[in-house]
Amino acid sequence: MTNLSLASRIALVTGASRGIGYATARALAKAGAHVVAVARTQGGLEELDDEIRKDGGSATLVPLNLSDFDGITRLGAALHERHGKLDILVGNAGVAGPSSPLGHIELKPWNDLMAINVTANFQLIRCMEPLLKKSDAGRAVFVTSATASKASAYVGPYAASKAALETLARAWAHETANTPIRVNLFDPGPIRTRMRATVFPGEDPLTLDTPDQAAEFIVPMCAPDWTETGKLYHYKTRTLLSFRAPA
Image (cartoon, rainbow, N blue to C red; front, side):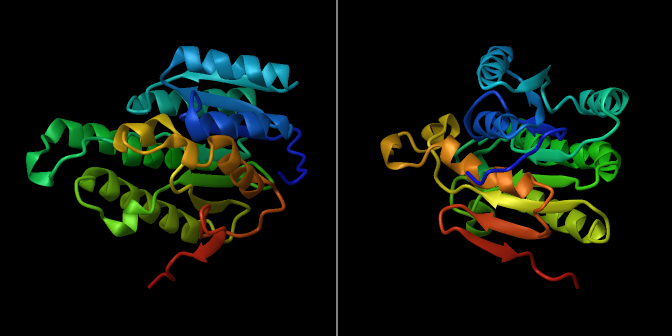
């Protein structure tokens, strides 16, 4: 990883109890940031806190289901009261949803998936933008997937949610282009996570890169000296692509 100093930076990471979120939270803390770790799983957050403390870092644990949109509002208010700003937002939390033909999917699992993958990120943007504007270099990174453009069969809800997330990020990047905020997307590709194993149970996980390896490329996107905005970074190909230009 690039030798970055994120001392005095406040970093909010969602889905921080495992996988890419866990690895990113730990890496940000190693670089000096105080990490606000958000996840549903209390045990995973406590394990993360133990590892961050072993590394000499610090964290605030926030057990929160992101479908609790009022909870996100309360979190924004708490961050304002305690820190007065937010420097880094990593929108990583996501659910895979059902793997079925669209015509076989009930409305409730569709709504549950959209609540976490799309609406929660919209609510994070609403509630955290004022705090990011208080930073001298607010940075936001959202974790997406190539299926947003591939629209593969049997993962329609997940693909639609990631396409929606990318559109939100593109719009926000355009809206904040003349501010200190920089908004980007990160596509990790196939990574050795529990979600990946659930969707592709026959895949050999040892053939995949680890969340720690992916996190090494997310952390520089959160640093003050990262000046790009409106970009999508593909981890697998190590390429940085521009969003489509606004009409």
